[in-house]
Image 1 (spheres, helix red, strand yellow):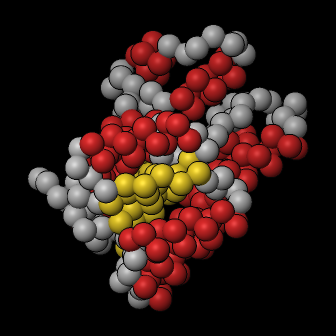
Image 2 (cartoon, one colour; image 1 turned 180 degrees about the horizontal axis):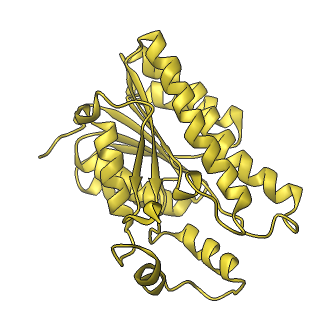
Length: 260
């Protein structure tokens, strides 16, 4: 199947690496014009360059998702360039590990600002343009940590659990407005992305880079880690009209880890 999002315009935050990068590339491959935003400018521009080299349409915008004025600017630029917005992928996020006893208030608030405030601001400022475009799909990246607790990840779990319920509340608000905007969350498990380089050493108390293959062999029912492309496939499904009857739902992609 090809051209699953042909003619649509997508905005992907945190699109310079990991799940965001894979999602931007796949959405473009399937026909969407993609706006990539991030604070990693060189990597973000590389994604846009790859999309254009493959014949797609894309643009890059430097973007701190915790800054409301930047959100206003980003959405205005999307409107000026493409005239519409059909897909919003709220992907940008960070993980700061540590015991609840030693976590600083600054670290707690930093995670809240990026992981939760960023999703709120993205939804708030993108929704009017999406409604003016005739509807669309908002896809919020939560986590397995938004479904169950994990030691040394209290702050991260709080943000991702907040994303989960925020998603459901906004889905009901949009459904009540009959605006043709669907809102769903995705819950990845152990995925080979930069964020796991922060999570695993913190959970183990060490500083070495994680061996995700060994961790997955022991902890994931399928015995395998996930790849960014596995999550991007879920993003594409929720972005496409194939998921037109889904809203307020959780798409769990974790190799069965949530069943334990």
